[in-house]
Amino acid sequence: MFHVPEKIFFPPVLDQALVRFFWNGESPYKPDFKSKALALKQLWPKLAKQRGQAQEKHYSIDEKFAQTYAAYYLPANLLKLPLVLEEMKLLGLELGNAPLRWVDFGTGPGTVYWGLEWWASRYRLNFEFWGVDQSKHFLDLGQKLSVALRQSLVASGESVSGVNHWEKLSAARSGDGFEGVIEKVRRIRPHAVSFMNSIAEFEPEIEVRAAKMLTLVDELARFSKSSGDPVWLILIEPGSQNSSRELLELRRALLQHDQIKVWLPCLSDRPCGALQKPGDWCHEEVECEFPGWLNDIGAEAGLRKESLLFSYLVCSVGNHPSIKEWPSAGVRVVSQMMHEKGLDACFLCTQNGKIKGRVLKSARNPQNEGFLSSVRGDLFDRVELDEKGSVLSYEKKGEAPSSIVFPRPR
Image 1 (cartoon, helix red, strand yellow):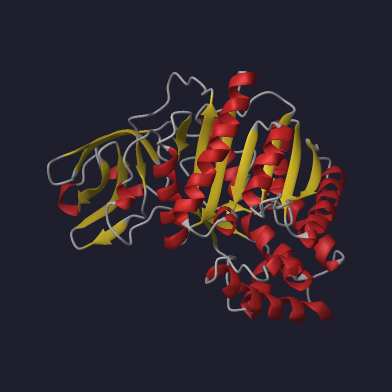
Image 2 (cartoon, rainbow, N blue to C red):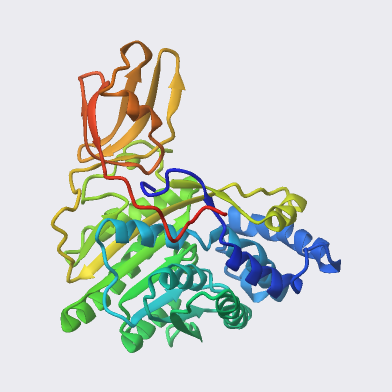
């Protein structure tokens, strides 16, 4: 993310809300700490290896796993949406009129709601949120956790920006869960629709998934045309190779629809350089200092969270915003800086695909030395390379203002 030059810190008010909810305001070393850690160890392969795609008995149907997911994965993931929304805002993509109607499908315990409430409360953007899921345990947790969050914000003197609803996703008459998605969209007529770590669970087969998403785009486009406003489609997936590549394949399919425009992270409808080679992928990584108790639980299960690793797409459907200074020809850093013998290099996403930009140690000068501080997600209006990929000069996207969403601890 170009607006996060250093690591971010988990907001204390959110930490406090979670500790009060799960641990009664105490440190987590209680009788149920070991049981949650054991459940996390059992849950992890269902998510990381099976990708939550078990059809016979989904993990969320088990109350123990639903509770464990909420305790570990909600705090581990909730800051991903604020990172995306902050990038949108700083680049001129406004979500629209308030109150903003937002629907999140496969909402789990309300991870997107927590991220949206935290971000929106910074800017006092009023919204109405619908969290939709198949699991009664997740819906119950989502509602209860939303109360805990709002109480913590109010107690800390923070503003509360949204109201929320928690609804079960029905499979409709055909038994197709995605028909339930379309039914919700028709009734709520949202300004924004999100899927976070859930779209692959709706439909494991990428071709079928793409066809269903195109049907959703049809529906969102009809609403956008009647309202005159854009409808936002925001997809956030894990940063693993399989999840990221499938999201990029979905991007390619979505771009075939004449009513959709992909804004981020790609900057334009450019061909995806990460799909040129099998095994390549594109993701974002932001270093984060998580609460100590989160890693204490994870350690019992052999896990540790030191960063937010994810892939994402931000799309508008139907009517598209007009941004005068949008960096459609811009360049984004899509790897860490690699230190090789005699040079430093990183991969860049450009209008012509994915290329490597390098700086020879023997050729450092005032025109290229600053490029060496580039990190994954950085944006440049221009990068000039010679025929071998050496950086001759560059123009970095303007520095983002000091963040009110990810402030440093005092």
